Image (cartoon, rainbow, N blue to C red; front, side):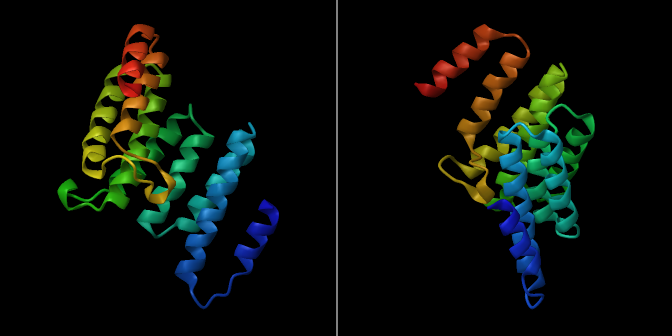
Length: 182
């Protein structure tokens, strides 16, 4: 179904270029997400890169596309810098003025970057990025799915648990997990 989806999105009429561009970015995001789940990271990276290219010029679309790039390249230092750049470019100067949709994207990108930092053993950066994401999550709240991110306070706590696992702190991971499911 994906080849047909991509073909149809590319054929979309040029009468609404912004809407067509958003659909193209989302089609490549879906493709990248599926390829990650199938273990095809190289192809997922290609789809995420195409999403980034299609999103060029629109900070919100770039942030959407960058989420999938982080999924496709979970251990890449370059991907971490892309996550942070996209998050900070899309973030409002005053978080209180940010919409839940934008904060969800920025927070998700910070979580991706935090997990990359955790995988590389950078505990300080991991903690700082998780705290920054938690601040955004508190403004968004739980039970939302803006831009298909499912971002919120519980997601940040789950990321803290995963980061503890990456750091080898199983006691903290179990404690955090028990608190979350409680």
